[in-house]
Image 1 (cartoon, rainbow, N blue to C red):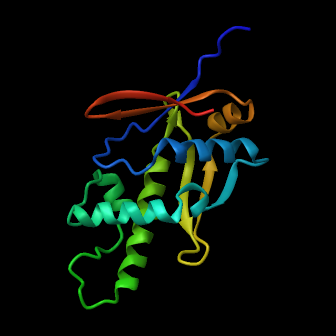
Image 2: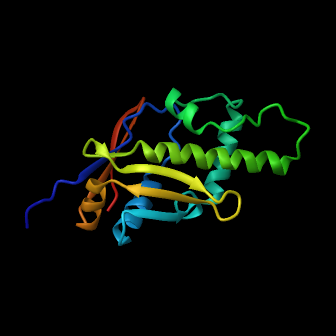
Image 3: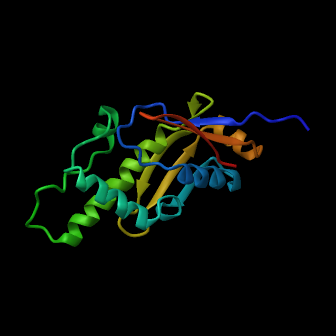
Length: 168
């Protein structure tokens, strides 16, 4: 049996803080594979577990709420800052922060490419805070590759170099 070269999933936009993990990309691939349609509605916690979302919020807050994202994401997915708003309840602050994390993750998911073509035509977040979900419109190319049960590798680039992670 000949070796099948994996389809390469990348995030080409420069990200100073990468929120989307290889596990999250693997979950997305599995959801697309299992779908009968290109349009998916996935509970946000199925891709981004609440505990990990909380961790990302703490990381962002520890960085003094500096905006570490490129201009496209900042303009498209930026939520009102929760920094310096000591008058609000902590719960409200965390809720707004978690929503911001989900929105930023949606923005990064939208930049994913497979073999240098978009994985998703659109990515949106809805129904927040009750049962938040990612609404994904999968590109024809990505949908076809996933449905053919192709192998995927996630190529993660950082200041330390490039790492290839086999997904499935």
